[in-house]
Amino acid sequence: MAYSQPHPRLSVLSNSSLSSVEHLSPTTSSRYSIPSAPSINTALGTNKQALSRPNIYDRNLNKPRVTDVSGAAFSFLFSEIVQYTQKRVSGINDLERRLNTLGYRIGTRVLELMVWRAESSSKTPKREIRLLPSLMSIHTQVWRAVFGKPADAIEKSVENADEYMIIDNDPSIERHISVPKDMSQLSCSSFTAGIVEAVLDGLGFPARVTAHNTPTAQFPTRTTILIKLEKSVLEREELLKQ
Amino acid sequence: MAIFGLWVINKAGGLVYQRNFADGLAQLTSNEYLVLAGTLHGIHAITSRLSPMGPSSGAQVIEGESFKMTILLTATGTKFVLLTSLAELSAESILQKVHEAYADAVMKNPFHTPEMPIRSEGFDLRISFLIGNGQM
Image (cartoon, helix red, strand yellow):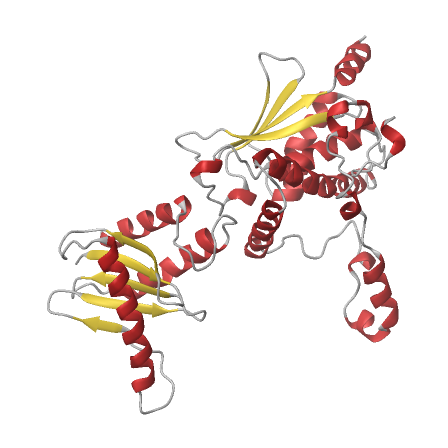
């Protein structure tokens, strides 16, 4: 029954869980279409311009000419994203879920590009099917691709076997954000959680990923990305061990 | 050498941030600070039109017997005012850094409403760090 409507995240894997169907709200699903047509049209229409300034899609995927984007420009953009989202939601949970969904769209692209860059040059390209190496690659490769540095720690929950945590001591997207006291549960790293969720989904490890503030005296913006894996993932891991 | 206080005045003349760092000036109520900031805004507007040589940036330093007031006007009309002792030489460079902190911790903060009072922990922290360092 989950297939009756298109999933906003275009994900087949998480359809099995009821929780992810909650993400689906008919009024917003049109926002998640990929707006590629206008940019292609402009490139065709104005040929001279296209020659002087090459289209981003014509660039070599393996050799990015500019590896870094301006941190200030991103901060302003992200600030506007949060303000825009905040105007359209009621409550902190809703805001976090929207940020998560926005991050999810980044994550699907990050995974595709990352796999392409890592495996296309390799002599024996392979697909990662084990959980721990996948989590490690998120901790190092994904973080390096998105934030330019690996995450600070990865931990397994002591209480629950299906929970893993990725810890960032100073998340760069939150560097300039001061959350007011009345919204203290809000973590803007829900955006990052969405990226992680998309990467895990894409690798075949459906999970619910959330972000939580876990400040310490030394790192006031320390954030924990909590990964709660679906039961099927753990069952498959058990089978693979044998 | 002492830094007494910092004000941030928005482009409409409202005081959006006020903080004291050292004793030495009379303690005022928040209402009096608002009135003073509005007055300074008006004086500044007048001084910017007094120049016989055409448009001027307005008053940059106002000196009294026991203190001076250094004013930094940004391109968007926000004013940063630093109240210091007469001997303080680093006021201008501190104001530049305050402007930088404002751009980072206030303007990039999605929970700040432009032209409204600044309630940002990040900005408070940056200012404490900055002025704490400035005093030596």
